Image (cartoon, rainbow, N blue to C red; front, top):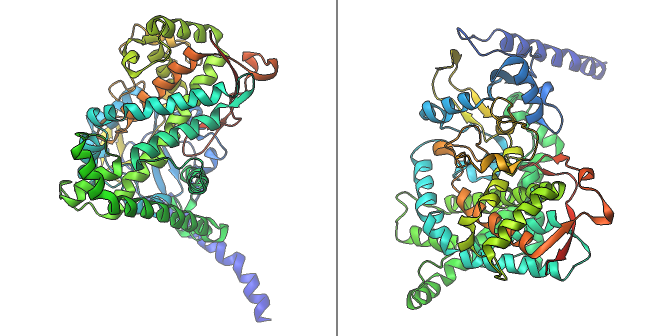
Length: 507
């Protein structure tokens, strides 16, 4: 009897909770003039409108109906969706000091060392010091140039591996991922982990980490449902991956620490002080207390996480989409090859000295990130205080998401926005470094990505060498217009179907 009553009471209990949550959700205070909003469900808010794999596309459609500044509710959390360049400028430049914070996230707390990284850390003195450390010590122009030999060596190895497989279809998606990992491993750790047992483990963990980082976690938006993460197995998976990646990073830092004095002495004797990997630099800053704040082990691992996990996915994604569009557009491929051949002037290899002269190559890269920003919905920000933007009242604590994908395809900003036309950038000063708000695939302002220069130099070098060394075609006689360009969601938006192509060495 008691058991029957208990079972019968469960639906009533959930219904009661539902009504309570609904009441508080629908009776919360409203501001004088909030941005337009689509109708919301109790508890869920507008989450049901973003279900599926392409939230950036769905938000674009909603923005067409409700405007470039649109207020949604993800569960109990108010979220401002920014879909115009003018509004993005207001958020990231005019009122940037009010939008420098990052909202707290379930996955970031567990995988990014409780906010001790530069990407997702809450705004404050610790973040300012880490950002300064990145821009002045790890990713300065001088430091990026010092890794030139590494980039050129890895590109040469990449080309050699393709030559060995000539006339056979190569999986460029997979190869780009390996190349990005190899370059970043050498820059960050001083050696590669791509083919040995440790490398297999690292690549597997890296792939799983990226999937988790691109996931949706209901506890971020409906806190009283956070227990679902435990029941679904997400908590266990996160802890397992966190332990495995931590073990790897601990081993790397310990190995560098044991060899630090020996390597430091050798670099000094060789007069090659610039040839240090990221871990060397961090250990030196920690030892000599040069960082300006307490650079503990978790800060170090958080910064390495940014470079290794975030950086590798971004570079590989840009290369994958660029090559896919070149294969779809033989005219563009030919024009790029002609530029590269003219500038190489008979040299067997393209070096980084040649890149500044390759204006069409840079246009191809810009057009790629316009159409395929690696992270189409930029990392969220959070308003610190109540503020008025474009006549709308935005409450403190509102999450702000900028739809960089929508900006890149806005017909008010771009002629024929859905077409791949690199020529649009040849007579234009527009760049992707954060000053032109119609093209901000890497964000802008103080919260913009500090690794743009590092990533783009490597991408330009590889792309130039690939079109210089080879003619490219699709396997099995497939036509360019038949190439599947379907997206697949994750921490970055990459191709759902791996990019296969056949390379024929050019005479």
